[in-house]
Length: 114
Image (tube, rainbow, N blue to C red; front, top):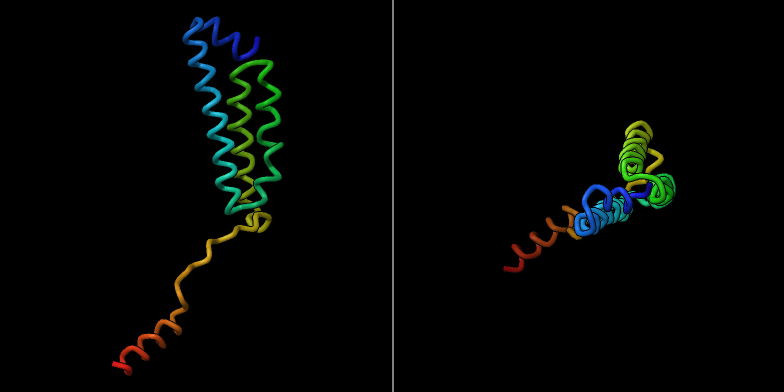
C-alpha cells in the first residue's frame, strides 16, 4: 500500500487529502533546508541523491519508510559532518565591514580634519 492508500484508509477522503498535503509539506521542508544549508556547505548538493532517493522510491510503499529514511539519512550526514568537517568546505559570509586598521585611519582623518 502506498501513502495515499494509507491516508484514504485511515482518514477518509478529506483527511487523506490533508494527510498527503502535510506529507508533501514535510518533504518540501526537508528539500528547502538542504538547499538553504547548501549555500553555506556546497557539498550538500551532492548528498541530495543519498538523502532523497529512498524518499522518492518509497512513495510506492509506505509512509513510515519515507520518514524513517529521511531521518536516518540526515543523521548519517550529520555524523559524517561531525567526524570529518574538513570534507565540507564551509563558506562563511564575507563581512561588509572595513578592517579595523582602515576604520582607525578614517577616525584619525576625521579627528584631524575637524
